[in-house]
Length: 320
Image (cartoon, rainbow, N blue to C red; front, top):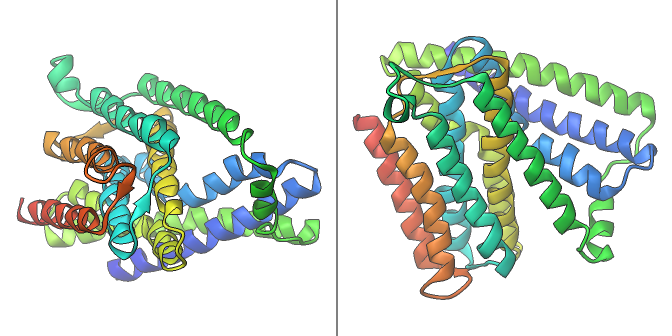
């Protein structure tokens, strides 16, 4: 039954996120909101809606390990598995701005999360926790990142904006409203089913919620990004993967955990320094592979190495 809850919840989340994005984008377009704003807000929210829904619901249910584990696990999966699979299909070229700005920012975000969650080590507290103040600080970082993204995106050629326009569905306002309402309902109920299923599986297997969050939940919520990146690679457009991964990782840390911790403090018990080290190391690996060997390119061999790193980390969690 828990497996059915997990699968059914994930399906509802994915359908709900897609419906909400389509409906909200259509409404925004009717009110003459630019494609740039739609792409950087509504569409970005839609692609990270699974992680946001699962982490917020987990936080409300008092499952801090599941909420934080979902984000850390998703970011590790994104950096190692998605980039690794994409590069193994076709080498990924990295733009200079991505290598010198976005990926280092992703690395700094990972370090910031580690510092926020290291109360035992830094403040000599009895337990690690991301409190409301730290949650609001992460949200402030998200607003800064969003402003930076707006500034960079405005410099893009107009042709790129016309491409985005073609992806927005044109529909009557009443249908758009139904899409938005239906999408929100799907996200809410899907999130509850998914978290209940994941918690039930953890109890049934006798493992911690943190391990389920770092593996099963993280992999499930990252499936849309994996599918999108692999398809992009098969269509000879692998560069899309690096942008999706970096944007998603920053969104997850700053917005998803920022929202979750602002709603209710997140107590962290089952996530240790090894998990944070792998999180930081995966972002560092992206940077180093892009910087050295073949400059500004992640090769097929490096992609395979990234996949093997993820397999090794998952094996460690299972044997833990």
